[in-house]
Amino acid sequence: MPRPHKRRLDTRIHVAPNLPVPPGRVRDAVMRHVSRLPVALRDAWAAHPRGEMVVDASVVSTYVAEPTYWRHLHMAGMLLWHVDDVMQRREAFWQVVAAWLDHWLGSDATGGVLSEGAMAPFVPPDVVARWREVVALGYAEDLLETNVPRLLFQRGFARFMVSPRELEAADPQMARWFRSVLLDEAFWRTLRRRGGGAQL
Image (cartoon, rainbow, N blue to C red; front, side, top):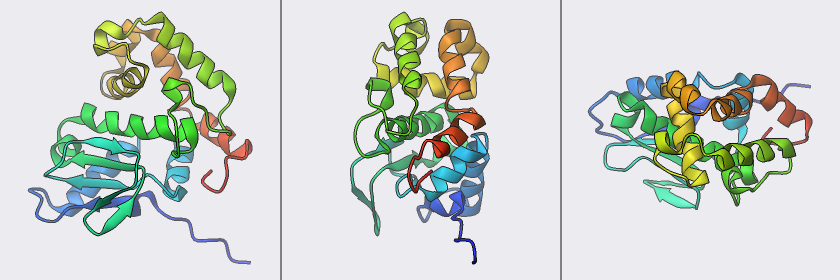
């Protein structure tokens, strides 16, 4: 029996026309960034019904959880980047990725976010408990200029991807959480074993 076709993550990237950068270079830049994520995460992302990626020159980079239109596409759970944040401002790029992962792990991208206590059925409970401990300690609040859990998650992950030593110095437990959850191959493989559904 033939194996089902496996969707590639790069097919989830949509690039607006008339950007100052050739579309191929933009797609390559996005994939170069996300290639730093675990393979199991990327495979699950490619198969997930949400998580489309859009690059435009007339938007502010953000994660859009609710159903919305972008040109001819109607989608929910959209990662939206200004082209400059893909090509130059990497921290802004990673904040959008963090918001998507927060929503995905919190509710399979259909409801709440993990950083505020939500937990998708396939996420081990200790993952949320350990994140709450990180937030309660508050070591990274000065560095990240916030005490809001959702923003700590987004800014913390972005800072870790761009300047890991800086986050490790300010909040070693937060750095350890990102390393052992979002960036851990074994963690994402475990989600498959926990019956995360068709997406995983």
